[in-house]
Image (cartoon, rainbow, N blue to C red):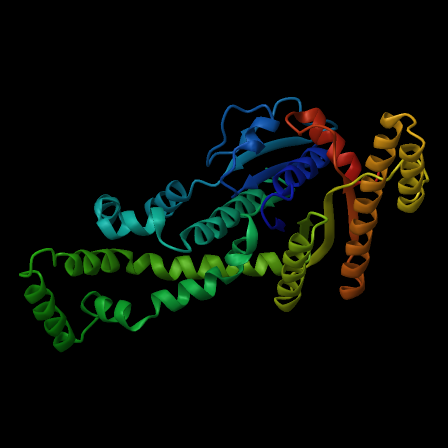
Length: 355
């Protein structure tokens, strides 16, 4: 599980990790929940969707690499079709509440991410399709919303209003059934008030699905806590990104998730010349005083600026390490060009491994 704030190279890190594993004999699938399309482009695939697609020229020693992107609506539809009766499967997709829930309801993406991860893992256990699943989570703190999915889903499904609407479908309480029916019939006489009846129909149709959603989400949550899982927190060498990384680490520790460590990505590379900021600045000032080569003076000032950045980033990493002792970390220097192909991903993988 690769998590981190936006714009820190999390997608690239996920893809590079997956590619490196595949080229060392692992059967890998990388799942991105981030809506950005850069993963497909860097892997030479025209487009990613809800179905794993093989990445050309990506495996060796018996390894393979597939890539996919979460399609929230399609995943929701797949779950409905697989878990309900044919009669309900026909009516649910046309229900306005289902359309809203499956496409834009807050938290649905996280629920479906749990569903898809559970599906992939179950398939891998059944037929050995994969022995490594790499997940690229959404940016910012929403990247950890899927940790709350089981609890939030249970709270929604167990709410009083939902239970009231389910009462007619569930049981012998004829008085309650009659009461809700009277209210529903009365409200539908108001213009536009068919909403309540649509909601009741939706909830009744989903009654058999709700328990399955909750059960599978909780099972996947347990999978995230298992020994075979590892979380990588990705950050840039900037104060805001490292603060977000600290939040991730603290939250993962609180939920007893297996933390592999921190990756500080796109760090300024070390300077090739051992010349301090003070020495470079003083030399540039002397050259300006004697009206010598202005180009050399400019280069010295540029070196001084880079040296300040390198020093500042090193100080930030040291402070973060002091505040989070025991958390392993790796530093990946910034590349001179964007990563847009498999060769670039291989280079990032080598840097991740310290090669």
